[in-house]
Length: 267
Image (cartoon, rainbow, N blue to C red; front, top):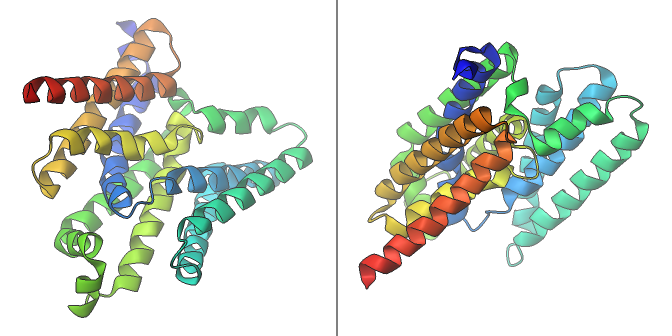
């Protein structure tokens, strides 16, 4: 149990707890918009930004965050251009992100090993600056969702009705996409770019099985996420496992268990 007295593990728990709330908060709205894969897309673009940050000697998470924000704007523009085939925007931006990241890797002389940390994630490497950035993003996301919950709910369930009622759909779309980019950028150091979308979608998938209302689903998604993130980190710390992978596998185990329980109750 001595690991709990280590500062790096305490920082990991705090960072994990913050992301455990913010990721499913945005994930609920992404699932409703049928944009679950946007997490993977923005994560890959963020990796390109992280690589550039290492290359030019600027805080990598900040550069990754800028890249993710630019990608989120590009996705919104492409979604407007291809209304009938909205998923094309995700495929195009993901391809561009992977290509740019690959190009920057070939230009990097000694930072590729550091960038790989962001691919697979390592929450134990969080420093004080990372924690402040994560806390800032978490506060911003929570405040926006609390003060705009009804508007966002209406928009995602009936966008046409929301537009007729005078809701500024374009502004809300941009805000939500930007918040998603922020959450993904600060999450990749925790679970890695390859697994970050799991924090956005799997807790929501668990909650949708048992929730009785949209608000209930949001609350349950946050609870599932917090339990799995903190439980996964503690298990990884005690048994020397990969923290990001442990969190994601625990989320999948909870999803499978919830499905079995739901089926059992129906019987």
